[in-house]
Image 1 (cartoon, rainbow, N blue to C red):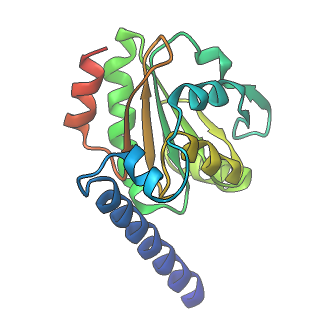
Image 2 (cartoon, helix red, strand yellow):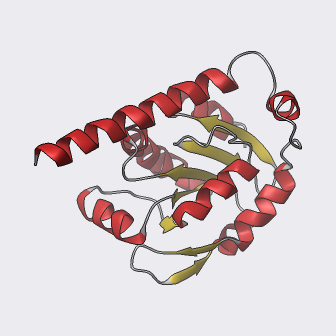
Length: 186
């Protein structure tokens, strides 16, 4: 039991540190494209990322294959998360509330678990989430990177309008008021 608690503490600290480092990295005054260019890579192409999202192979928590293409043409809030990520778990009640608040406006929230099917299923049996959650496995990290998450930390949230334009990205725990401003502009 002590080993499990120690491992959990290390995982929480690592996730928090990753989110803090990612937050600092993204908010240090330079743009994402400039950061990517400095790293010697190409700037992320949001349209390519959106197309990858619609083609992504995912399953639901019961392991049944699903297509994200059903969300194409609708405003979508995509939240990359993992069951072992403390900030991910912390923001889920706020995301669920925002999903309920904005459902009447046609805005769909989806969770993409960058985790194993077993972990996602176990997590969802314990924690109620009001929006659809899919399993991407660790390939979801590559998809998040396509949206500009070069830090590779979680949670990572992307807002896409009905035309497929990326309106905002957020590394780290969402701030409900900040996300509401983006959603109110849709």
